Length: 169
Ligand code: CA2
Image 1: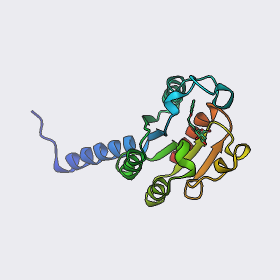
Image 2 (image 1 turned 90 degrees about the vertical axis):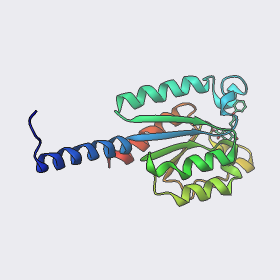
Image 3 (image 1 turned 30 degrees about the horizontal axis):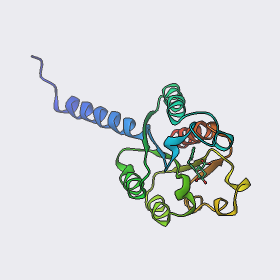
Image 4 (image 1 turned 135 degrees about the horizontal axis):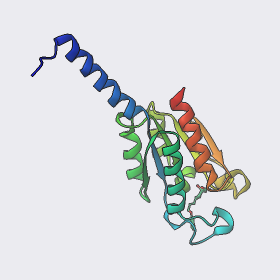
């Protein structure tokens, strides 16, 4: 068998390393907050007729088009969302999050977002600024890279495209 020179081995190791860095750098985490698993089943006049599965399917389609890997988490638990954000830097280069009701209450999620160097795009199906007063304040917006609100299921796709732009920068 032909022997690989030390220089060639170093080059191969380097290529391997950049490949894995590139894989990590093109991976986006989508986080759906509490009760978003109920989408499509109730309150379609506010949140639209699409189920969470429908939205996830569209996100995966877009991810394929944009050559970006995507992982999706739905959780009704604040601590689980905090943990996912906290451990995101190793694996993800951007996060798209709909914190749902935690948008208006969670200092823990805000602190988790502000503690990481991964860009975070906040999305909402409804326009939270057109709704009840308690929904008009987002604790996350001040530490997110940006926010998209009011475009129904398209908010996720617009948020995803914003995240891809941030990665490509
Ligand atoms: O507009 C959004 O995306 C929200 O983040 C949705 C949250 C709400 O608490 C925020 O104020 C705005 C609610 C998510 C739960 O969605 C449901 C869907 C169907 C039935 C019940 C809840």
